[in-house]
Length: 355
Image (tube, rainbow, N blue to C red; front, side, top):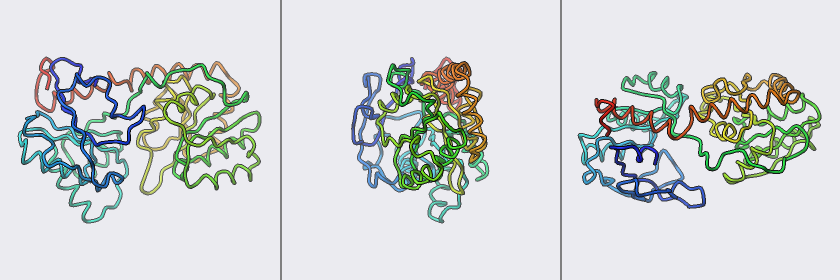
């Protein structure tokens, strides 16, 4: 919507039907800025790599676009679907794909086939992190691959709120799926090493919850570890305003590492200091506006939490740095400018001429 408000740019949006809800992307605030919006059903919508759109040509022939920007991974059937439609319906349009994949995993022959065809058909791939660029280059991709993460801060939702604190003690928050790679066990071990007074509050659900609850009991921090379940976006924003620090303790596996960490920018928008593991893209997102510790190192995390517990001034400093960082680096306006500038470069047009 930010890009569509810029002069000289027109956009047609084709997107999947969704379940709805107050924060769903289907609730576009001002459709008048868009030339057209098409909502399309998806076959196998639960599988982002094997789902297909219920359309043949996406309206490409009528739209006659300069650029087709597909928010689809290159190894997905949806990306191949779009590439074939572009070839048949709008062969002069530039095709831009999107990837977050920052681990060069082994792939089945069928996946390699799809990936090879879509990358060959594309004119560029926009990457969500620097690791994704590295993976593309390892696969021999030599076309443009700028890092322009599509995730940004929704400042209308994520801002500092006047809410009741989770506890009167120094409160450490963690928002994550409760699975091994999110590293919540590292946070529990760090709180055990930190000692009282401190409370760990965990928002999220997942299959690892019983094991994490048992770990907290075994380490003697069961009473000071609270599992709060799921929260909607509004509840997440309120939670971030009710804690002293957010910990993002993700750790890499053989097939995955953190690709962005959207809760980092949400916490920064709420004025909450962030401590993150040096895992995947987390250091790129935090930069110098938070603290980093070696992934899986509960002792190092405990030391950083001890520093923050002892100094309200240090917490305020990191909160200020985080707010500055999120506005300068992760705002919708910044991302819109980066994307439109890339479109112009891809089309070989001067800055005065918009696509």
